[in-house]
Image 1 (cartoon, helix red, strand yellow):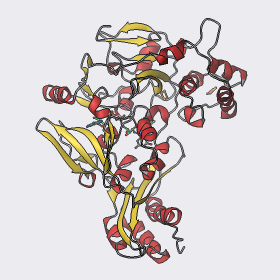
Image 2 (cartoon, helix red, strand yellow; image 1 turned 45 degrees about the vertical axis):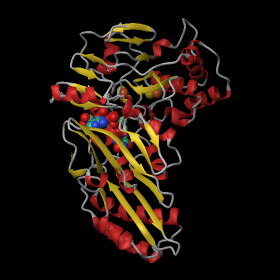
Image 3 (tube, protein in one colour; image 1 turned 180 degrees about the horizontal axis):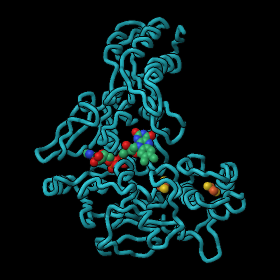
Image 4 (tube, protein in one colour; image 1 turned 90 degrees about the vertical axis):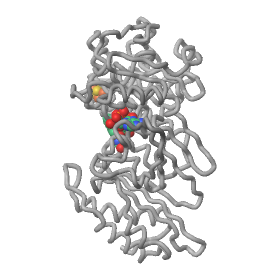
Length: 461
Ligand SMILES: Cc1cc2nc3c(=O)[nH]c(=O)nc-3n(C[C@H](O)[C@H](O)[C@H](O)COP(=O)(O)OP(=O)(O)OC[C@H]3O[C@@H](n4cnc5c(N)ncnc54)[C@H](O)[C@@H]3O)c2cc1C
Ligand code: FES
Ligand code: FES
């Protein structure tokens, strides 16, 4: 294969000369592969879902559904993509398509290719619960027939076919590549060298944040350094005292591989975007965007995480509590790459994460909160972390309230005092999602809920 070639529905396609910043969706439709639809262009509707054939950590092949509207063409060299056009053979539909037909799962059909591709990936993954289609919106059929189709697929044994044969093939991660000004190095050293050579270039990991700007045709940067082929950034290393999560690990892997280790993370990840986004979105990108409403920062703050940064002069580790400086400003220098987050393991913590948004699934937080508390044998608080997103210019801990809890038993009166103090602790903004008063009230009420649900303390209210 040429270094600028990728595999599309089993055929090698050379991308030499193509604009690397255009989305795969636009590129596909420009080539008359119009089965893949554009609904929103923002990662919200799933109409554009395609499947990447990726290597998993053990070197096996996996079908990974992603939003083609967020995937820049520059990320494709060396990769393999399946679109809805690959599924049927002549007049014979794929079992997923057949199930949708039999259960009347399509009316106008605009969303249908996206559902087909999500169900296709779930069919081979053995995961056909509602989560398989959580990132797909349908405006006219209603979800019951679509869920019926998924249910029928769950009940029938999967046939051995050309796709199971494809999955049986071992696979390696894509090698370093470059398409025009879009560089995809395979090592951290090369990424840092590229940044020195192209200081104006933007780092890009999963592209679920920057991909929205690219999809809207905004000029994000004159060049890109993609971090999604750097093996070191893809490591998850569970140790006795801490777990090190590579900054480039997609969130669905964290969900799967660390399930049960950090309950606050388990609580929040299912409400972070939808599956197609989580298949690409990374922890490094969530912290790298430095958004005050990024959902992972409150959890990592509550767990006393630190981050490792690599730059031309070496590496350094920074406590996440010292990472955020101001609105979208962090201590990360422009040439530094987030390498990993280190999460200490403490068996004595009671922890939980909460996300309040207008819509339960696939919505941006009004307030996200994470709490971690340890008590001594007599029930007195000896460790408290109360962290919030959406209430200040940066993700933030309620330091004074944390201190006020220390050394005291956490009873109904203490919870009530903390609730009132939390409702005064920050000066959030009002915006189209929620008013400042509501956000303030949430800070206190979520802590009271945590105390009730996880610590068994009924609040006085
Ligand atoms: C539909 C939709 C729903 C979303 N829902 C949520 C949600 O519920 N909660 C939430 O918090 N976010 C949400 N997001 C935002 C986004 O998905 C997350 O912030 C995600 O974690 C970004 O990761 P990424 O790898 O895709 O980042 P990218 O887009 O690749 O990068 C984001 C920023 O981080 C920088 N960066 C990335 N990796 C590194 C690194 N290793 N070192 C230094 N800088 C780096 C990039 O330069 C860029 O500035 C949503 C986005 C979409 C499109
Ligand atoms: S077009 Fe809506 S998610 Fe891509
Ligand atoms: S069938 Fe019309 S949007 Fe789903």
